[in-house]
Image (cartoon, rainbow, N blue to C red):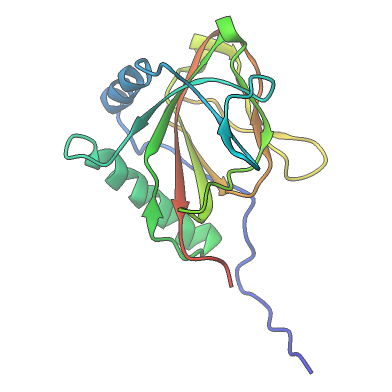
Length: 192
């Protein structure tokens, strides 16, 4: 016979943080994002590939280096704080950070997807840091499908949205200007 033990903290569908980065730091990250030239790929059963029907963005990766470690440290503080308050996952790692450009010229978008990652990382939380001011673009809404209707996340510059990596989400097409973000994934040992 099994005993069902209630869990004290239900998993929250998303959480957010504001004020982690100054305007100057956001400017620095935005300048790095402007160097994005690689066409983003999507994961398939056969590996990674460009699939413009699903994703049209340019990306550049930010690895942990002495110049960039402050970004990782700042995000680690945000993630650990929100994780304690809302998710309670065992986390131990960040992948390289992804800076993205969603360009109106390309109708930049990323259709409904989940952030499963690959065999090297067991992604548990996804983070999206808004780099662009909402006045700089139109469209480009980050939406989470938690219930019947998608929830639209705030576009405020410096806003960080955090959600379980398996949550279905999308970025709607950018129709004017450029949407720039920093995306990160926190991973850990497999769920048990």
